[in-house]
Length: 244
Ligand SMILES: C[S@@+](CC[C@H](N)C(=O)[O-])C[C@H]1O[C@@H](n2cnc3c(N)ncnc32)[C@H](O)[C@@H]1O
Image (cartoon, rainbow, N blue to C red; front, side):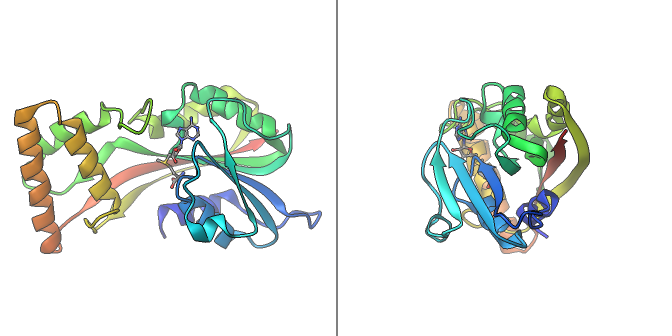
């Protein structure tokens, strides 16, 4: 089961007692991978509010009549009425926000009593690449974790392990805490390992010597992939909270 399927399962999208569509927000929806998985996991009618700073949903998600695309800055109060949502899902977003605790508090505000918040995040510092030079891999992963990507204002490569600490920001009951290794054997374009490797190259751009070593390292990962020996994992953390 992939990470988005696991997270959708944790969101428990069983039909509402009233028969009304379940009101679900996917915060930081990006291209809509989580949104698409939530739609597939819903057992009954659902209204999915996909919120992001820009409109970048894939066409199949954007044109799904159950989806409402919402453009909003998640550093501002969420664009929902108090107690109006049944589920809020926030995946790999908290690290980019100015105040992750305020994010959790505002998720509490917009949830109905009994509603669920699913916070999930990769913990990038746990990134594992199989390879022949473990020392270099460690140096490069440290660089990657310490660098804010160009498209973001901020990042925190340790956010996964901090999620449970954020749960105390508002009166929530902790329903479930889960972690797993998100394992990938592919190193082709758009695979997670490939995106992290690109992040490593970007993070070494200001250091000519390290950048050259990073390029050799990426080439060695491609060779491993050709031999079927590529392995990438990162630890995911998910916390399920119920609004009291
Ligand atoms: C790493 S992506 C996660 C995408 C998706 N949740 C997933 O896991 O597949 C982070 C998303 O958060 C969005 N984001 C980051 N900061 C934001 C902000 N302040 N307001 C709105 N969206 C933001 C980015 O635009 C991006 O689409």
